Amino acid sequence: MTAALWVILPTFAVILASGASIGVGLGLSSAITMSTVMGTPLIAVVQKMFTAVDSYSFLAVPFFMLAGAFMSDGGVTRRIVNFSMALVGALAGGLALVVAVAGMFFAALSGSSAATTAAIGASMIDEMERRGYPRSFAAAVVASGGTVGIVIPPSVTLVVYGSIANTSIADLFIGGVVPGLFMGVSMCVLSWFISKKKGYRGEGSFSFRRILHSLKDCSWALMMPVIILGGIYKGIFTPTEAAAVAAVYGAFVGLFIYKELRWRDLPKTLLTAAKNTTMIMFVVGAANVFGWILTWAQVPHTLAGYFATITDNPFVFLMLVNVLLLIIGTLVNASAAVVIVTPILLPVALGLGIDPLFFGVIMVVNLAIGCITPPVGLDLFVVSSITGISVDKITVKVMPYLLTLLGTLVIMTYFPPIVTSLPRLMH
Image 1 (cartoon, one colour):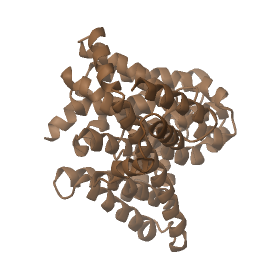
Image 2: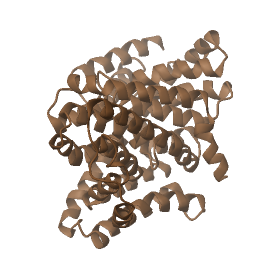
Image 3: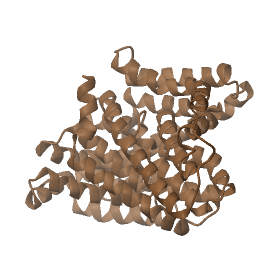
């Protein structure tokens, strides 16, 4: 069993170092280990990958991806930015605050950190530079604002966790609301302080009329998360059915309300959603095989015993988990990390009396922060591709936001009601 670890971990590291994707690294290293050490037929790799995603709950992933694609191509991003501008644009550093607020709104539509970063970055980075903000600072603000994409519902990563941990996806969605808002507001506050110090001014003046006008313009878009969460908690439909409703609603709004999603664009939009879904499903399937090998090698049992020798205090355990997940989040896709780590850490957490809903949300917050944690945070590379600025330069500017988000993580970890109060209230 130890031999399996000596093969799979170095092989995985070498494949990633060669420039291969996370999914390829997980799948290929698993296949090599199963064939050389475990003597398992390679067909078992495909079977286990299929079994991992052959779930009713996972149907929510392609539908949420499709809903996000319809909304993104249907003119929603521009309307959300305009509404955010009306809310906070007049404050010092208005555009920096707009990025964080728009990121929270768009996160409620996309369910993806990278999608949120790309959508807001494509529309805001050039505009911020034209208004006198350094391009590297604008990139850092956008990368940080995108982190809430997998925390605020509908979050694809929370769907993955709920499916694996057998935890209510509806409760996880509600549990992610306050932490996501907490992260977004903390970044707004930091942007305001930085802007006051640097002399970045606001845009225009505050006007309730402008807020109402922009709210009316984007009200159809903002209704989607209300329909999703309201429908789930009213018992009208399941989270998976809610995802299908969201996809139909997104197409309807883009085609018939905003009329910026044209019929001839549908094949391209569908292809984009299909590519994103395939990437996530492949990663989840490969991660499931990888995690199965770790379980076969008794890693969960060994790790549980190791934690038991270190501490039986749930707060110390959570701090150790935070450190571990922050590291993993810089190296592995969030959904893949959840598939690999949940079967290992969740039994230990349950043994220490930790609520699985709380544990799941804290895991996702950790992995969200990992998206801007150097050296290989995903959002850093997304904004680097948009701006043409090196990841090193963006990392320097993103550090204050990273430290702020780490502070919010510590507060959430040691004050669980931030996560659990709203689900309990809804019940």
